[in-house]
Amino acid sequence: MLRKWNKAAFLLVAASLLASPATWIEPSIAHASINKSEVEIIPLPADLVQVLKDLKEDFVPALGNLHTDAFTKEGSEYRVKLSDKKSKITSGVSLDLTVDENGNILALELKDPDRDKTKHFDKKAVYKNAVSFIREQVGVDIAVSTAGYLATQRGTATDQLLVVPFYQTQNDVPLSKKMGEVMLDANGQVVMFNQKKQKLPAGTEAADPKKAVAADQAMKEWEEALTMELVYDQEIGKLVYVPENEPKIDSLTGRIAPDLYVEVKEERKIKGAATKDVWKDQKSMEKMLGEDLHLTLNRLRYDFVNENDKKADVSIHEWKAVTNESVKITLDRKTRTPLRIEVEGQAEKELETPLTAEEGKRAAQQFVERYLHAKEQEFVLKTTSLAKQLPAWVDQEQGRLHPKYRYDFYPEVNGIPVKSAAYTIEVDAKKGKVVFAQVNDAVALPPIQVSKQGLIGEQSAKEAFLKQVKLRSSYWYAKAANQTAELPQLVYEATEDSLSHAVDAHNGGLVDSWLAWEE
Image (tube, rainbow, N blue to C red; front, side, top):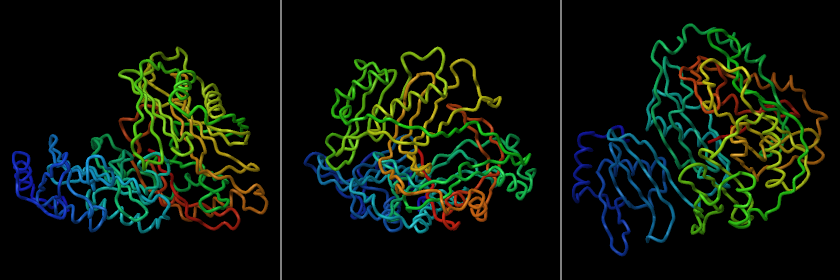
């Protein structure tokens, strides 16, 4: 693959291509570029042609139907654009590929408006293909997630893709700062890939793994800290116990590494009164943006981003500002119901006294009731906020720490919540308002007759779950709102494949469970 390129030859060929027409052409891949009514042949280096052939054969079969649209150099990077376009006004499958001067793939993105998002994943087979791609493109001196995640957010390019992240290592221990990830569809085809090396801590800054406590000591502490939660998993239609937390054990002390965030759960009755009227047109949405999100509309420029994309199942509306805040709203195109609302940028004015978590909760619930939920219903509400006591590395000087509160709303029946949140709301404490809202319209309630009778208890579920748990060492970079620790902490944590299981609440057997991917 790319790492086998002759660097000198590649640079020579690429330079000649950029300076004048060249003859390195592979008819099956270096096809015509559409430029008005003229056909322009875009040649490619022979080694790059071979790379595209290998990608088509092993990882991206869709390449067989694409032709080259552009081949350019930006700094030390080479970029190739391919598509199946027959004219400038048509849109279809396209591929963007970025390669460095050493022949390493830095980024890949395959766009297909007709990608099947309903096909069932063979998790093991697709994960295996993902690992093969990572090993070929990145190498073996990295740590790869031991299980794949599933991205499910509608309206995003990653919806219904299996995601496998990978990490650099130091002292043979992975660093939690992600180096990159590969994303595949249910057919095992690579759809997205990116990699970027992270700065490694100096040798004296990273704790010596040889000084870590024994793994069995860490496991004992981890077992005591683990709690399990009973939920309804709609993917398999069962009541299951899932891990409620993911403890980290300080490798040097053998004790729990304090979490910088606190989670609190409570039952709440949501009295929804939302209608589709607010989302019906630009004027109605702008009324909401002004009244509830406090945006100055005459400073924003409106754009219906994908208005001409007739194949899209979502509509993307943006209000952009030169300075200060911008907002993006993603709607289901058929039903005109919201899927995602994002406010980004610096507010014109911030509160002198930031909102408390309780005040943020009221704002989040009001937003759900007014704009997202249409009826009265019971929910489990999970509030996530920063702990009161933060480590010394967190800079809490005036204006430097920018906290947000997160509120996840889980529908429940007879005291049993569903596994996935129906609504996720983020409230910026200093802006004093909702800055993010996400709707999971695929959430299904458990059967109305569901109950806790005849189920195993939490302790039995915990014992069954622990039988398959494995711990590994990791250099963990703690995060507090918009700040990340400069130095990592050596910890023991559960592997991804350990966490991708649940316990059947009826018989205590282990069942497969997806890990949820968050951008």
